[in-house]
Amino acid sequence: MEIITMENNIKKTEAVLNNIIKLHSIPRILAEILEYLNTESVNNTKLSKMILGDQSLATKILVIANSPLYGLHRNVTTIDFAVMVLGVDEIRNIVSSLTLMDTFKNKSDEYLDQGKFWQHSFLVGSVAKRIAEDLSLSYAGEVFTAGFLHDIGLPVIHKYFHSAFVKIMNDVESRGTNYISAEIDNIGLSHCEIAYKVLDKWNLPVILCDITKHHHAPTKSEDFSKQAAIVHLADFTTKHLNIGSYFWDNDLQLDMNALSVLGFNDEEKVIHQIEKYTDVLNAQLEATRHLV
Image (cartoon, rainbow, N blue to C red):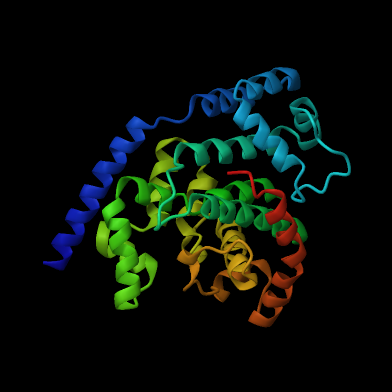
């Protein structure tokens, strides 16, 4: 009976998700910019004009460009300058993150504070980027975007499965279960799997889909275990330092098997690395308070 109930929950959830994806096609500005960025030669002036077509997007790009994330020594006051100093790849990552954030933003209520949620998402992306750079890995931009989007399944549940969202929180409080188990019990899928399905349907890069799906269990990723491990570590960092942390991660535990692919062989070494990011995260938190 339990198996039948679970299968029914999964079918119902997937049916709702299919309708959501049809209702919310990939945002026009993102589709146009990504299509242009994938052409053989990108003209910075044309790209800037496309971004300026959405003033809210342009303003947020300037906020991010001037944040400690990039450590630029000059103020970035125009989109032209932002495109020049950050480069096409970074602009692609930022645009993807911000437009998807706007797509699934919902009104805050007692169950989900949108400001705190998206600030947590941005800080996870920021510290993931810094970790990749400190480890001299080449995919800092990708893990920034994946870090930003790692929990995008949560606002989807909150917005389109609201009664289940409330039930999940009540189950965690009353039964002492963890959030992912409660998600699966109530809707058949975890927020990680929901994020994967949404991003995959929108044809976003495979690496982003894979990391969002496996950020709680990086060893299950066949092709991007290192990148998923970085986002997992970044997520844990906000919890451990209590800077931009989010209550859904209260029971998050370090997966040391996953972190071994990054060269971390014991938890003490991991904690030492994490604590290096205290000042960076505090500065980033302050710089981006009004991003959402």
